[in-house]
Length: 246
Picture 1 (cartoon, rainbow, N blue to C red):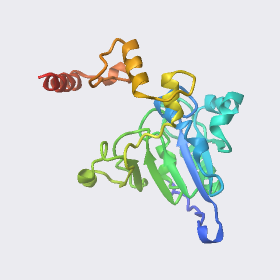
Picture 2: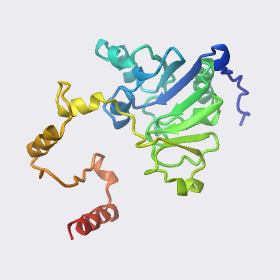
Picture 3: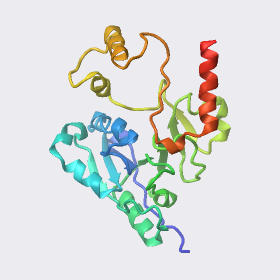
């Protein structure tokens, strides 16, 4: 196997006004997926007077979604680049294909590259393994350590990555103060309807009533594909509920 390319990395010096170039690599943005639903409203919140943001897309359908007029207000001036590959998870990675994808990232002058896929479907760890950016960060798409030497940091919170368990992560933990998820405040309004209503206690009670729920008490939900729920996990839930009840 040929040695990995030797990339030229960009320099970032805010004291002389150098722009910080951030890259986000995702197979799920701009489609109906938890990562896409939560991150799409975060994109335009970047301060583009201080940074340059490029999203590297995998699926061709994402390119189409990015061009749709109704998405303009949530995307802002964020740039998009296709690195391709698509849903070919059964095909082995081609070395040249990997180098070409990494070259697209490196040629964009990315300072910090965020991985929003991890080891989930259509991942591009082959690109990250070539280290096209000087700093590579794991975030959102895969909750857990990658164990990969090419990922330096993991953006998480104290719930999914407790500080006392830091030695179980290959990455340096960068913990958000409350929750690692980054949905916009707009999502709260979507849950309450299309109008921007104040998410008050009264509205909270009304929504619970509409769903046949009692006005108070915890609600345990499962928003995932059914094959990810196994009997041991379900037993943990029922045991926890039983303790709450008793």
